[in-house]
Length: 234
Image (tube, rainbow, N blue to C red; front, side, top):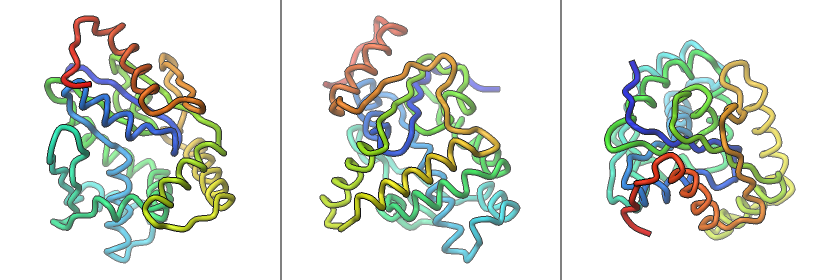
């Protein structure tokens, strides 16, 4: 049975800023944070490290059930460090390669079921902010506030391109557009938990908004449901 601690879900396609927005909202509220995509990235990395094919659903299911992953909080204002079998993989899983691999393993129904209870276990006091692709539709269908962030394919590719260049990684914008297009198609057409807004989700188009403006929009929606809520900071 799912506990009834408050939950805010932030879903959307890759490149809409949902991860950063989720982190900032969780920090303002002083709530727990779940980056659900990180679990799929960690699983994909674990599969590669163990020489496992990314299309072997049965093997991936077993790996997901026994995945040795830890989220180590360092401060309320920064994302937790992520350990896989004791090794810090926080930065390793954030590459485009691992993002695409995560999208592939996430298409398998058995894998999603195996990770479901792990995601729901993050629902603890005082509340949870979570971002992903099926948080409001499948993992937390009874969430108190559901958001869905959108942006054009070109804008999302441009943002990702800038992020990678800031890290000293040279990328081709047109190739990024195609990679995102393929990932969107895979996420939207998978048989289980396809990427889509929940029926009661609030859609926020982030094309022309800064991260701060998106966070402000999210906080306005949160305060409609929790009018007495006080921000911890910001």
